[in-house]
Length: 337
Image 1 (tube, rainbow, N blue to C red):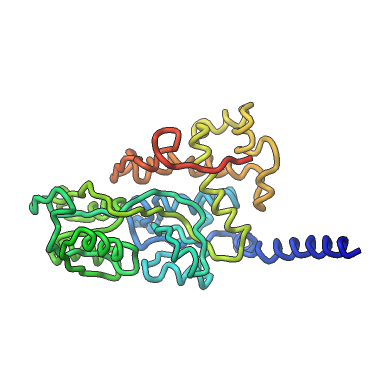
Image 2 (spheres, rainbow, N blue to C red):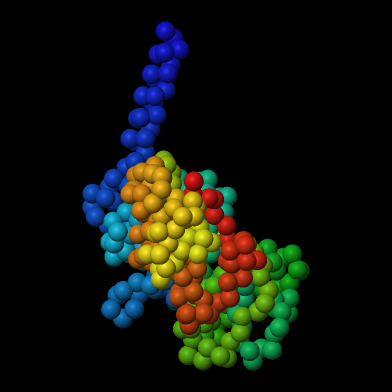
């Protein structure tokens, strides 16, 4: 009898746990859109155009999420957030997901009541300088003044780098990315430091972009990806597997252009991915064709990368580490099965 009661309690507990942790997806479905936290304007990742339409890699992750849930990538509302305010907005429930060039660290993953879900971009911190300085290496920056943004991992990284190399420097910190790049352009500092992807994006804002260069030195690991609140495993899974599905789709060669043909594929992996076999979408609280919806509306990870930050964009950043693991990079996703 004790074993039976224990089993009943366990089953009841699992049911209660599932109900308690399905809140965000239920709320998103009820209100009809995903509230997505993004940057205040970082070309290639999240920035609005003159008409207020948002584009970028981080933006497309949210659009893919909306496509998976609603079969409509436009069912997203974007909240622009500073580096300082981004975590509070997620903690308070102002946004459902934070998809904003945010580095995955142990401290952030354990002390804030938040969870990183997956890596959407492998980055690293670098330096931008005026070509007129004739500097070829970060090791030549001793005595430099360095512009950076507060509330980011860059301040600690640059301190570690200069201390480790026994070089002197002076930090000039600003609250927003726009303030930082404007100060650098105005000559208030010798160097602008940030994630390399941001350096490419911010350089586009300079009046004479060709007068500036990004040094080859990369001084840190900056894995970037979306975050959700602790305590909702279903929503955590939905966001996490949205990213994984986009990567798996690229690996399996499923694109926006060939989706209709791939829906007829006899490849077991493709069939599971697109939901023509099995019922894996139901485990997430979604339809079984959730991945097909994303690919049709937004494309796979490679398509998202290319048009936002790769060869189809003004940034034209090489894939590098963000190539698929099968093509010399480290972008890798667990299998959908």
